[in-house]
Amino acid sequence: MDTKPIIFSGIQPSGDLTLGSYIGAIKNWVELAEDYNCYYCIVDMHAITARQVPAELRKRTVDQLAQYIACGLDPQKNTIFIQSHVPAHAELGWILNCYTMYGELSRMTQFKDKSAKNADNINAGLFDYPVLMAADILLYQADLVPVGDDQRQHVELTRDIAQRFNGVYGDVFKIPQTFNPKVGARIMSLSTPENKMSKSDKDPNGCIYIMQKPEDIMRSFKRAVTDSETCVRYDTVNKKGISNLMQIYSVATGKTFEQIENEFVGKGYGDFKTAVGESVVEMLRPIREEATRLMSDKAYLEGIYKEGAERAAYAANKTLRKVQKKVGFVPRG
Ligand code: TRP
Image (tube, rainbow, N blue to C red; front, side, top):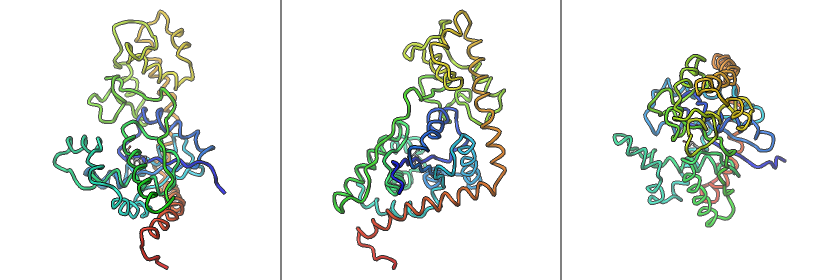
């Protein structure tokens, strides 16, 4: 029997992966496969809470799968699948709706932020988004959910829903916890280092993508915002830009902060930024090449997501059947 703790995370198919999510998330996930039973779900059903161009959503969903595999996530050791391929998510989502309060959903800060930004499309799916997310997590009896700070409130709500349900029907759901990625794995924007690196950065140089061409990566690093000193020193209060670059360089080269400080004594920021850019180009080169190769191998990718959905559905249906029975649905026989 598989007794490893279970990890579940969901990823929006919202475009090419960023350097921030590679360093902050996926790179760490690769190592988790030995000690945990990991499920990674590409959440296309969550994606349609904002209007999508269908052909683009389809392409991004499959490209994202290719990019995850290229980053080292082994589809044999991890279950990687597409949310809409496992109907149990929608089915449990509905049931959990009936155990979630209107007031709870109204308090979700992401709902408030997103509805303020998209006042013309405040659809019920956007409001209900956290319940589908709770269904994602609870279906797999996940112990740990690796997410960024912006998703913590949703995991809290998941716990509340699970506890409420268990309170009525007994121990049906495992109560999940958020999983803290390694310290310092939060990569900031190159142009506004106070903010997390994000696809929605107003300055295109702020965000690096794993599929970007080397010359574009170099340009963004050369324009990275620093400070008025000339000293490469780790100080996340006064030198946010430099510290962020040191963090990136450290991940790309394996060097410690002290080694990096020594390497650049007496050199200018120009040299440092070039070195960081080059190290990132080299780190991403094999990933980009492999992702490009995989993205054109449709048959291989289809095999992966079919098998992923089968494995996921097997685990999910066990929980779903139990829940359906508890709430009083007639078994289908
Ligand atoms: N809401 C998450 C985000 O936008 C994505 C997500 C969907 C998720 N379902 C999940 C994350 C389940 C963790 C677990 O980032």
